[in-house]
Amino acid sequence: MLFLLLASAQAKPLTSAEFDDSAHTLAPGQNQIDVFRVSQFAVTNEVELKTVVLGGINERRGWLRGPNLGVEYAIREGKQGALSVEGFVSTSWLFASQSANAGINWTSGGPKTTRFNLSANVGFVTAEAEDERINSLNTELYASAHWFINNGTTWRFYAGVDAYNSVLTESYVGSFGAEWNHAWQENWRLAVGLQYRDSAWLAQGLESLNGGGDNLPPVLPLPSVDLWYFW
Image (cartoon, rainbow, N blue to C red; front, side, top):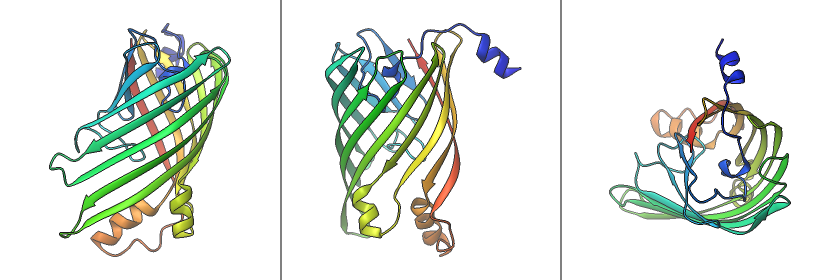
């Protein structure tokens, strides 16, 4: 019943700019409130501001953990593709940890067509732990394909790897997966999928609790879900 409701409801077209892994930016006057991923607010044709409200397992930290803000600038964009650069900074509420990252994004294809995306990012994290300041570096090489079915439905297939930490730990650090994205009820969007992610984050948590993080497989399957409002 829910599937029939979503499939039949009329909505604004689901465009490339609504996906954070695309180099397309929102048009002036367009905004997007996202529950778990990046919310976006157009400032000009080329500039949009970004922030994460709640965050998720594989996303940047949200406002529950501390303030965060990003900006993306479109160097060029059109029906043939787009190129953009972006930066993002965040801090914990007690300023015990801070992070910053910058990247470049490229998209082949228009806002309402099947698209291919590439991006490269580098980030820096500093945090206090046991009266000691710990600094770490992370990178991301990322690729995705947006299979445009119609104005209301787009499939997204993606894969990313933290090349620096993968070499450092001699293991895969990253994620890959697929998700179904659908527009419904005029302004609402829903994404449901399956993601495979490295288990290092869970292993560290279990190790700190009971020392049981050594028996996990290198990659874990996880369901992914997202909801956002676009206007």
